[in-house]
Image (tube, rainbow, N blue to C red; front, side, top):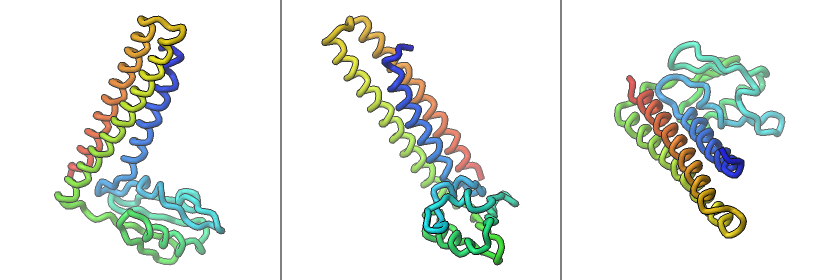
Length: 183
C-alpha cells in the first residue's frame, strides 16, 4: 500500500471505530455496561465517566449494578443516569445502584434496528467522503510530478480500502441487528 493512501486508511478506520463504539452503547434488552460509557458524573467538580468512580457488574442478564468507591457519590451517579438518554430509572439501597433493563417490545426492537442501519449508512457516507477527498488529492498530484498510471493505482488502492470498510460496516450492522432482534 502506497504511503500516500495511509492517511485515508486511518480516517476510514476512525469512522469504523466510532461506529463500533456508537453501536456498543445501544441497549439490546440485556444489561451491557457500555450503555453507561457516555455518562459523566460530577466528581469534585470534574465530569468523570461512571467507570472511573465505581465498579460496574452484571449480576443477572438484565441488571447492571454500580458500586461507587465513595458512598457520597450515589446521589450524583443516580442523578447523572436520570439526566442521560439511557431511559432507565436507577434504584439505590444506600450502597449500590441497580439498573433493571426491561424486555424490549417488538416495536422497539424494529426501531432500534432502523436506527442501527441509519448509523451504519452515516459511517459509509463518512468513508465514501474520505475516498472522495483522497481521489481529489490524487488528481491534484497529477498536475505535478505523478503519472496517470500512478494516479489510477492510488485510486484503485483507495477503492479497495473503501470496499473493505463498507463490507466491515455491513457485517457489524448485520450482527448488531441480529442481536437486537433475538428475543
